[in-house]
Length: 224
Image 1: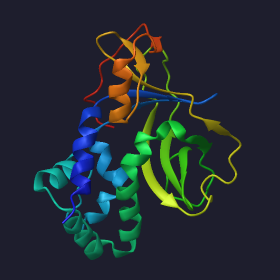
Image 2: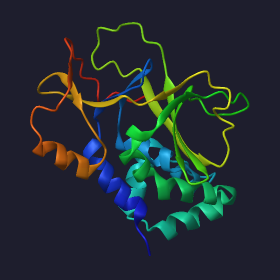
Image 3: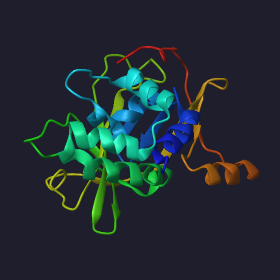
């Protein structure tokens, strides 16, 4: 039995409660990462039956604490949401690689109107004949003095073989920078999700690009 979901959980733990900034040419997203958001990105909410619905931290703790294998997870999805099994498999098989190569993605508007997706922006990569979509919901916030301001959140992740969700986008921007907030130094520093790139960057000196900030508010434990 495979345990890819559990491996993704372990890999992502290092980013839990991290504040990151994704910058394009004109677009910028301030996001709080969290273990509690990961199950939804992977589609694990489809393991839920109608009698017991878990989400967020409870769903994460249930999947991780039970140490379910991939097949055990797929069995639950086949039972409760059989039409979602292919979608979830694609998410699980591509998510970590997508995040590790997010710098190679493009920022586009989410323009499909007939959808339950709340995201107004998509970060898109192509993989073969598939387009991998990371949905970002960005909200306007009243104060820009709060740093990190966390005006956006990762809402969904999915794969499609068409451009339906961004075909009318008026923008297409390369990702110009990825940054993580350093609480000790109170500033954003260059960042990557790729462990190998992280180790390589530690060997280099003087290459880091930082964005100093003046004010910090600690709201990491606040539930959305």
